[in-house]
Image 1: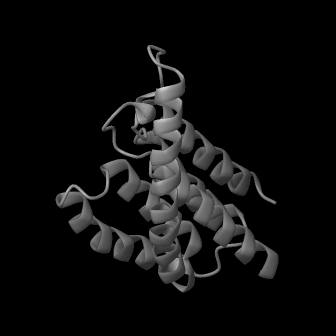
Image 2: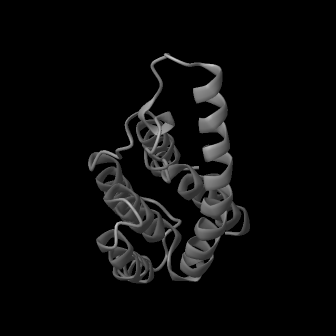
Length: 158
């Protein structure tokens, strides 16, 4: 496992933490994923067809930007998904988007239930932004879960 691959996982975990606590994914995280991918292409062995991966990222942006424009997905989530698509490449783009949609729906139900339980059980406590009433959902969590599942699957096969 390369240093860039470890960085990939670490940056995904950081994105999840930021999203839960602040409902924001810093731009440095998707940028860091881009830089690590470039380093993996230059010095690693896992990205055999970098153009395939670049097309996946561009296509992900083209598909997801309308959702951002309709306020259905946050900008940080779009950038994170595009950076993950870069790492996974075209063969994994459709499974990524489909599974994130499914996992996101299940996650929304679970998170709203947790939010209700925490807010009723801890009245008056200071809670993370994502647990506040009417706050958007930290959608990075299902993105990360699916990304790690697909990435681990591709590493195990390749």
